[in-house]
Image (cartoon, rainbow, N blue to C red; front, side, top):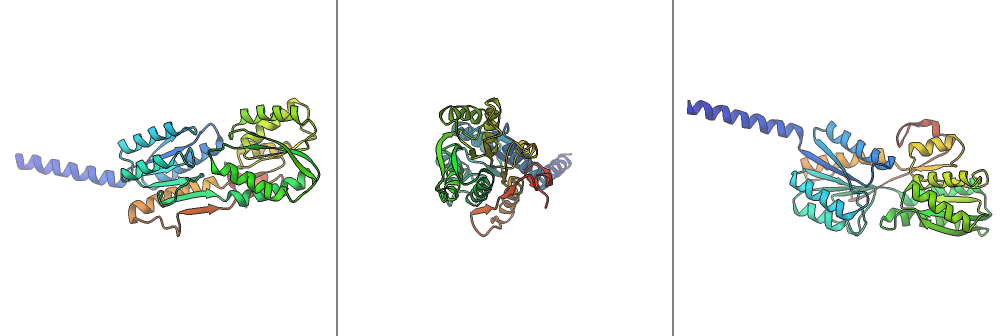
Length: 313
């Protein structure tokens, strides 16, 4: 009887092990703020890809706060995650959280934003922000013209993407001597802040002809403020991200263009590389940092957006 009980127990343990192996374990995905459709898509796509590959998926949000991010990493460690897909809250401030996960033996794959230390994350997958900013600025000049005053809405200073995009804009726009940037304010990637900062900029610079924005949410906030001021017809706005609301605004003639970040592509790719690392010890990518080119979205191709952040050519 005892031998039979041991045999049954062994069989149950074997079946449990097989089930756990089939499930692949838990993959923790940490995004910034899913109230922004960009980060919502990032989390949804990564979770769907993880489940497709046989993992459980848990999506959390740091909302750009490093303390919250650190707590989410602690939870991932406690839950014995097999990998962490992380959109870092802060280029410098997130280094400690990544180190903590690595010390616990959990590989970390970064998406969308980088950290200021290489050799920690197994991969860093980001949009080619410099290339995208140049695309956007070139289109902005076509729409706005080569003469006049304009303002800029900037993303979060703790995110390297904000400076990369702003510098990319300046590289193009500074070539036009008669285009003058008369003001800029930080909108922290947020629509409400974009609206409020646009109101401030309009009060200070009522004669502007254009607004160039670090992302779509701030651009959409600026459009709302311009509508309220009765100035949308004379002030043209450019965005960056390729969000569904931005695409709708392009179709409506309110936003001139957006620059599509292929977040749906690299969020899935990050999970694929995590899966590869778990199974082989290698991501399969030739280098840690990987850039994904952006695509310009205008009225001409806005109808080809078939899913959030997905352009069908």
